[in-house]
Structure formats: structure tokens, C-alpha cells
Length: 107
Length: 121
Image: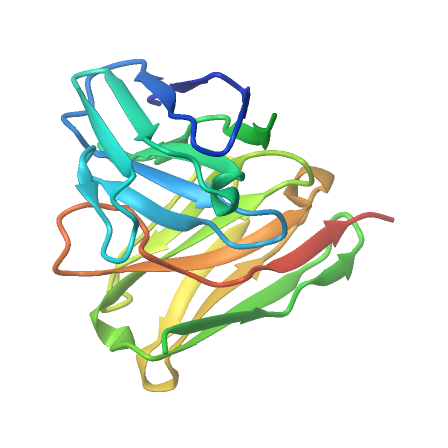
């Protein structure tokens, strides 16, 4: 199985700040990586796929990058609605695996 | 409007069975690969199963293989998860999710709101 190590597990920031979340795969995943946002009590929402492609309708302040085993999600200027949980997911092979999540909180 | 609505969750004793359903609208269901993903209370997301658009090929996580069975009825725009021999560690919110078969990757761009399953005596 491909293990996804996501960091940090929690993060405090202020509206307007920029933040970066990182995911490291236990082996190369050839950019087969997605990022999801999950607000409390809600379903996950796809933000980024293929490591860097922004899902339609997602604000441009979100961006993804990376290659090989290391990937990042960057939010350039936090808005109040961005405070949520974030998960990476690899789909290079089954079982599809998620990172353990990052809780982004308001400072 | 895209909608995925799960149902069938509830409280079941260890060893019991449940059948989850997910009925979709707002997109061409027969073009979509579908997935079940679960989330235990206070925990992260875990992929459970996948089914192709025709319904003739399924894939499962090791932890559920042989106990959970995914199927679909394209005429009813519904996907199912038959859950047998349930264990306490199956307790979770179960989300159905999907992606268009034209996309070149198993990421999920549509999601339901989930249905809660509690396995307890």
C-alpha cells in the first residue's frame, strides 16, 4: 500500500495569510494526487486533481504543485470559508489512500 | 443540480448486516464510476470500494473484502453497499462519491452527504 504522510496535522492562521500543506507518498505516484476540503459536518469537496489542476469553480487562491513523492497545497490569501480540514489522496494504485488530514484553524 | 443522497445507515449489532443505497441525480449516472469512502468519528477519510460504470468490475479495501459488496443499478441511478458480518471498526459515516469515466484518474468530483453506520451491541 502507498502511505500518505500529510503535514502539519493542524495549522493556525489569520484571514489574509498564505499557508502550505504538504503530502509525502511512500513511493512515487506520478502526480496522481488530489486535494479535498471538508468543512465540519459536510462532505469532502474536490479542490485539485492531477497534483496541480484546479477543479472547476474552485477559487484561484488554491493551487497544487509537486512531483514524485512530494506534493503541496497552497492557499494564497485565506478567506473565512477556508478554515476547514484538508486531505490529500493518491490514486496511483489501489488501495487509494488519504493523508491523515490537516485541520486549518483561525488564529 | 448534482445530488447524491445516501440512505440505509443505522445502528446494528456486531455480526449484523445493512444495505446502504446512494441515489443520484443531475448527471448521467451510467457514465460515472462510483466509490464508497468512510470516516470514523473524529478520524480521516478511508476508501472502501469502487465500481466501474457498467457495474461488472469492483475493487475493495482489504479490511472490507469478503464482507462488503458494492453493486449498482443504472436504470435506477443507484449504487449499493451490502454490508455483512459488521464489526465495531466499521462504525463510520459512509459517503458515496463518483467521477466521470472520461476522467483519467480515481479522484472523486461528486460527493453525497453521507449516512452514519454504528455497529454496537
